[in-house]
Length: 278
Image (cartoon, rainbow, N blue to C red; front, side, top):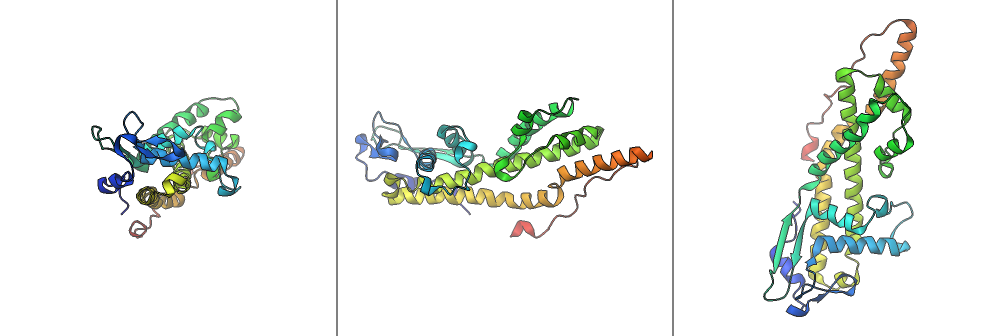
């Protein structure tokens, strides 16, 4: 299993080349970790370094790759998300400083839960409004980097649902949006960490390289840990948008013919019992 954060021994060896109060030459060439200097923040600094390299070096970023500015407006936002999910290890070299401070991350599952609440809060007003959904509102719900785009017709279809059916279908759609948002951020973070370890001052420090590898292993494990849930959602819930549109179209046809039988909800019983062990 991937290690959560950087171990104390490995973290301490990252700064063994430093001279205590004078600090260590770190990301961007700035001194860090010494007296009156910012601490060496392994997760945040690597993410900021990767963000800067990706923006400044066209050859490092394939044209098909989404730039991190499409996910986060600033490198500080990317670093904050990374430390919230993966945790942080801060190091200081000076003898009278706190040498090591660690914070444990809350993982991707917590992010998915928070994103579900945000997506549902954005979706609900569209369902109680009789007007045509505004493009801005639909764009706010979309996750184009993961191929998820919402249409006005989809919202119209959801509006035709009543009671429990609308709550179930809108909840499932919000869950799909949340999963796509969290995965897009996690994959972008993985890209930033891979680039961050190429920063010259990180690349020249063997223990910093190992710390970067641990962080990469950690985000990859987080992604892998939700792949089972993603497969379940694809099997049981990924057809939510299509189900809404099909039910809406069927209802229109049946209303014209004067018949409106209850339409069954998508089934939830196709779970692979062996997928979690893979």
